[in-house]
Length: 121
Image 1 (cartoon, rainbow, N blue to C red):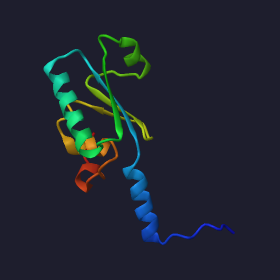
Image 2: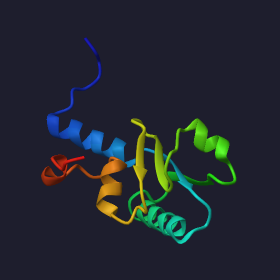
Image 3: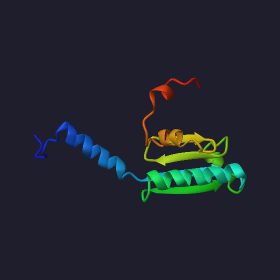
Image 4: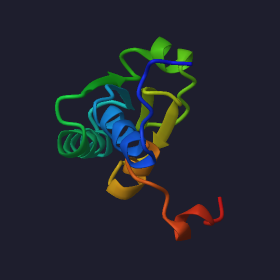
């Protein structure tokens, strides 16, 4: 037997929630030059991170025109693409990042809504 105290279900849930709130995020945003679409994606991701991940994220912005080898390594086929490296699982989000709710779901910060779970591909 273990000498560790047993947590009640509510205590276990609270401990898991606290651990999730302290997780560090590593995000990489791949853009194609400084086009208006790229600048919009940078603004949107920065805003979302500051609001929901303040103090616990690293955001790298990589221009695929200046560093095409990095885009090839990560198999980036469209830009802008946001890559969530940590915490696992790895996730990719493609587009301007204007729909905050979809970005939050992609980052694992918000649960999928019932009506979104059944959208056709």
